[in-house]
Length: 199
Image (cartoon, rainbow, N blue to C red; front, side, top):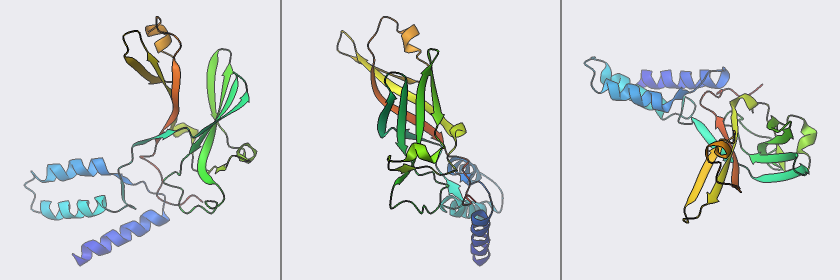
């Protein structure tokens, strides 16, 4: 038991100092469930060890995708350009030194160009002035999926709700018009975030 605790402490220290990924909690659950049916003489010991890893915040995570709802919308240019403000502290941020003055988050600048909607992550600090939001370098556009939720009440009183970035409902539900935008969201992949604090 003492050797197990020494191993876990060492492992946590390594994960804090090095850029190692956390283990998926779901993945550990699958292994633990399988070991319950194992004939290995060490299966009970392995289950105990994996449960310890599963319960350590520095070693495992149950985060897959988080859904972040837009907090504020700023119109830059009517009908063509909008700032979407999201409050979000990335789990790999560590201690934030700016938390007293503004909140962790990011801004997506939405723009209509040639009938296409384009969303770009704002990385220039000037974009964040007077927004009460600040950006951390660990936030990446590559891990985001920006989409909107639309709804429409139809003639029989039922409400139809759709979500997506490509306006498929305009083609597949073409007889329904005047969709209402309920919410704009970002699905952010955090499964593989780094344990180490960003340098």
